[in-house]
Length: 475
Ligand SMILES: Cc1ncc(COP(=O)(O)O)c(C=O)c1O
Image (cartoon, rainbow, N blue to C red; front, side, top):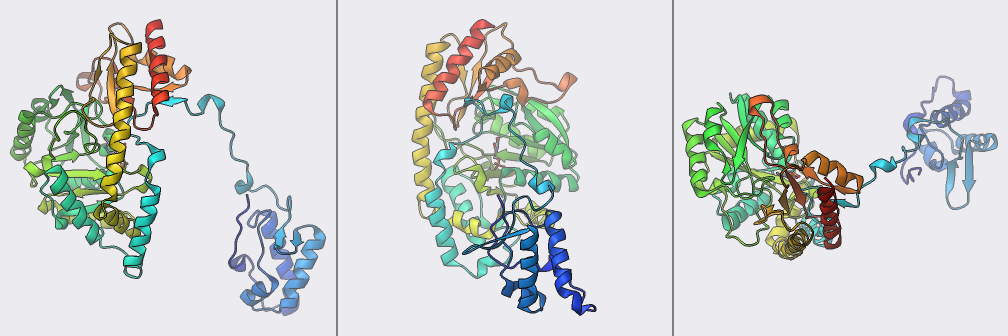
């Protein structure tokens, strides 16, 4: 569809040569014709009124009226009462912009059930509350907000985030050590780049662990080494042997196995960081949703000097809001802010203040309460469906978050189940897809499937598990 401009017209597309004033009208026609042929102005687009274009170009209105009339006669333009002068259909040649969008390959259309982990219920994103918060933010500080934000992020949001982290996650965060980012991944890239330029060469990553972090680390100048995970969380002995001086962990609910880092391991991990003069990068991605266990506090609260805690609203509100943060050790704040300032401006200022207002007003907590109920229901549906369709299999990692791991029986190959399910329109990933590294370093977790249920409603969960049972049974 052509863009329906309301404002000024193609003044820059037309460059009149005033040394040959008698031909101004001719030049105007010729240049508009060329622009239409080349697709610079597309079929259906409105041209400015004759008065407005004449003003823009500094020529008489009569010249523009005559030029439009000539192009109308030639079939380049159409005029309709009330909608002005437009470029006629089929007037231009095919430009790249007019190339129709490729048709969606039916084999690649979205699956009926998608157990992708890490996606919250997108239909429940609190749009109304968000609009309220944006409106409130705009009303609070309309002029100041239109300038560039401080490099560390909006001061009010930093205060709110730090207070929230202290209150809800037992953290030890303060506004001056808080940096606002455009989501978790943005924060992670800033941390990796900053550590690399401060002499860190190697970073340990949980394996299985969040996908793509190894590639992000390598892109930002660090060698990524896989560190195995067992039922107590990341293996600190193997981390110590790896020569890494930094590690990324998901201690509250390991991604993707769902185990919590045990109290003993937490202390070992912090002692390791102290011994190597290193850093623990804490990914606190879904701790807001926990079911039948006590809350697990943030590691950052135990060692604010050694832990960089990263978070975002991608799981609590929606990934599209794209705001995150980090609570950094005091000595790392300036280097991190400098890296941020040199690479991007971060999240939009208005949105940052809106998030602060959402949290201060209690609407953020209200949304979390509603979502806990939704996810609790989906989790129960998953448990019931597995009991019914796959009664001999075990579901792990359900104490928190929005995903679980379905352990596969001996002799069933993960990849076969993934492919078989996909053929029946059920998307799921095997645990091995969350591992990286080759040879001795490669992790070989017992076969299992990661089932994200955040964005899958109850009937689809049942249908998906039913299909998995058929595929596993046939394997
Ligand atoms: C383990 C983990 N941490 C954090 C995030 C959030 O990343 P972001 O804030 O960039 O959306 C995700 C997103 O899926 C994730 O899987």
